Length: 316
Ligand code: PYC
Image 1: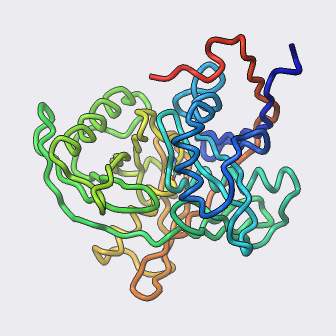
Image 2: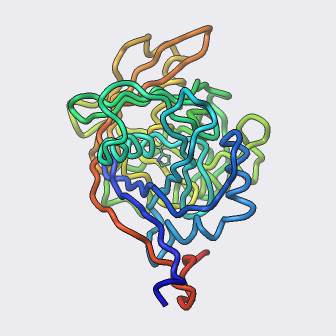
């Protein structure tokens, strides 16, 4: 029977508590061309593979997958398509840090600079001698400030719509403490905001759905400027400070004149992990950099047994 079982080699890591499962080999054949096109092939022809890798019983709602791909741009060391329990991510900051730590673990890269192709563009990364990783993200911007949404029983809530590689609704004004003990309340509140945005047709550019909701509050650590809670598209919360969410925050801070080029912004997550963010401005565009650490915590083969009724994951 072992001969008919498909095997998929993966390396697991976590970045500030948020897991990344990198598919090293055994993934679907997506052909060549830009990663945005290969992502569409992944979505339309191999979506069950996504579910098999990250959903229960092999994964969990919080697991983020990264399919390691041959880049179409020869200047890139690697390409990656990120995915989660319900679909695909344009970019993923914690996942890119996890990917770089994984490539270092497999000795595919040495400390220094590299470029990584993603479906939303090429991002830069620096693997520091310390093992920390800086991600130089895609250009990020605030699309709309102080947008009011009617969130039913929660009343009217105001927030900014911003792009950091994914679409975010960023809320400062709310009354829930950002504490792990309040996870259920935070999840219900942010899920209600997401549904309200959908009902009221508040979207990102080109009518793209805003599928990440980010709340801010004071940091519990004297070493961070702010703490966040980020609700991801599949209703799991980000254990890390969210690389693309911190990028969206940096773009809003810049738009408000609250951060200058090179200034450090430390973003604490709901579990207490910290990313160090800063921005560079080129041709009027804001390019965030996010520095953090990831640790490899697992390595192995996923076994796809055709007799297993849940072989391709439990899909909601
Ligand atoms: O770090 O960008 C991020 C991210 C997105 C979703 C989960 N993490």
